Image 1 (cartoon, rainbow over the protein chains, first blue to last red):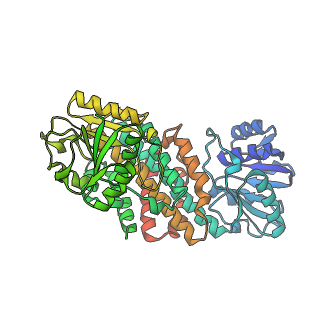
Image 2: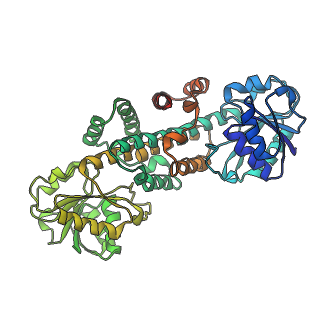
Image 3: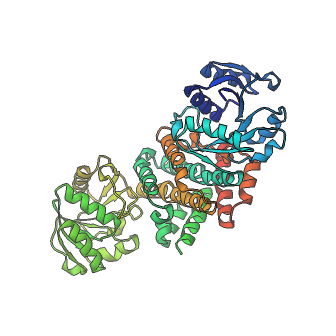
Length: 250
Length: 250
C-alpha cells in the first residue's frame, strides 16, 4: 500500500502527509472542499489536488482526516476502496458494510500546523474490519511511529476523552493562568519551570500521588481568599476543581 | 547573612535548605513541631534541631516555611530578628510592625520531597519591608536561582492563584485522564507524548492561541457523546471547562 490519497488538508492531514512522504509513501492527491487549502498541502507533498470527490485518482489507500461530523458525508461518496479515518471519537461502524477494507488510523496528538512535531513519538491507534487490513495499517503505522497499538472503538473513545482532559483542559488551565497574570503585569514565562516540573512528576508517578496545593491540603482560608479575587467564570471553575481534588483526598 | 535557621521541615524547607547549604550557607538549626521531622532534615543539613521555638540559636536570618495558617502563630514568638517566610499567598503585613527586617522569599515551584528538582531554575519572588533587607534577600536568591524577581504581596497572590491553575489544576486533569484510562485498561504512559507536546506549544505560544479539541471546535456531537460516557463528577467538570473554552472562542 504505497499509493495514498489524503481526504482533508487540516492539521492532522498536514502532519500525517508529511510523515508518510518522509517514509517513502507516494501521496498521489489531496482533496479539500477548500481548493486553496488542498493546493497548499499538495504543494508541500508535491502532488495533485482537487475539491471534487468524484475526481479522486485510484490509490491503494484513502485516508480521511476531515472533521468528525463530516466523515459520514464524505465516505458516502465511496464504496470498495481501502479507507481509514483518523478520528479518536468516531467508531469503525461509521463505514457500515460498504467497504471490504476499512479501518482507523488515530494519531494521539495535538496538532497545530505551525508547531513542529516529532511524528515517530506519536502513539498511533489502529483498528480495522479484518486482520489483513489491520496488518497493512499496522505496517504503515510502524513505519511512522515507535508507538503503535491496536485498539477497539470503545477504548479509542475513552482514550480520546482522557486526552481531552490531559491536553485540551490542561491547556485551558494554562490559559486562565495567563489571563490572571496579564491582569497583574506578570510574565507567563515565570510559570514555565513550574509547569515543566508538574509534567516531570507525572512521568514517574501517578498524578494523584503527586498532587499539591491548597485543595490537596484542604486549606480553606487560602481557597476562600483565592475565590474572592477571581472573576465569576474563573471562580466557578476554581470551586468545582478544588472540590473534585478534595473528594480525591479521601 | 551566612548563618540561617530554618523554621519548618516540609517540602519547601527541605529543598531550600539543601540548595542553601550547596551554595555555602551555614544552616545552624532546623525547627519543627514534630521532632522526628526536624531531625530528618537536620541530618541532611548536618545541623542541630529542636521542637521548641524558645530554643532557637542566634542567626543572621530565620526562614519560616511552615503551613500558611501557622505562620502568624510561629512568628508571634519573635521580634527583632531578620525573618522571611516562603509563602505565595501570605502578604508581608503578617509580620505587622514587630520586625525591623522582614520579607518574603517565595520559590514558585511544586515540591515533593521524593522528586528531584533543579533549584537554579526555580523563580524566586522577593519582597521586603525595606530596601537594605530586600537587597540581602535578593543576594541570597541570586546565589540560588537564575530567575529572581521583586514582587509585591498582591502580585505574588495573583501569581500563586495562576500557579494553582497551571500546576495543581492541570495535574488534576491528568489525574482524571488516568482514572478514565484505568477503567479501560489503557496505559497512562500513552498520553505522555501528547502532554509533552501540549507543554512544548505553550513555551512558544500563548495557551489560548494553541487550544485544540472538541470545545475549541464547538463540536456539539462529540461533546455530547463524551458527556454521556463520563461519571457524574467528571461530567460536571467536562461541562464547565468546555463552556469556558467555548466562551473564550468569541
